[in-house]
Image 1 (cartoon, rainbow, N blue to C red):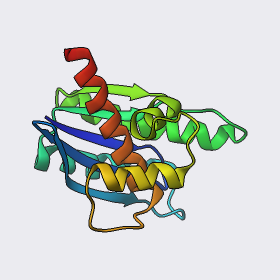
Image 2: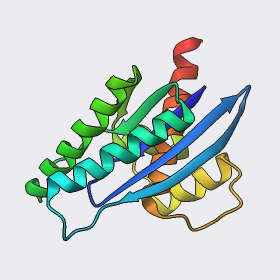
Image 3: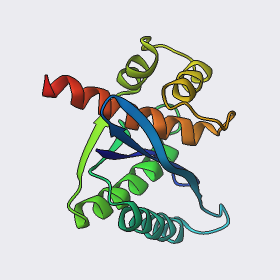
Length: 160
């Protein structure tokens, strides 16, 4: 099973493809899609759309997982992230991929055992679970890896 985990945003979208073979998890690819803050939102969304389509076409994931959006103090930013999420979901639908979303607490619990874990602890556990050689990856990437791991763990539980 190959899961495309996505850390939603519109300035920076983290992604990670995580594969499950038997009981082992491994990373196939990861990165950040960055958009230019000088560009208008529609141009930024087109860039995200093109990159996500290319990732899906290159790696053929079995499903896509994201965190549920949280509407905090800055509602304008949250609305723009929701627009980016819509573009990403359209790409998934075009490719016939199922989309799953998990709350931040579900992701943290799945990776660390603590739904209130700080980002550093999540990143540390992601590095351990995936046996990453590269350390100090950006939060966008480790968050994308964490949501992919969460989906794989949840899928295992549903299959029992």
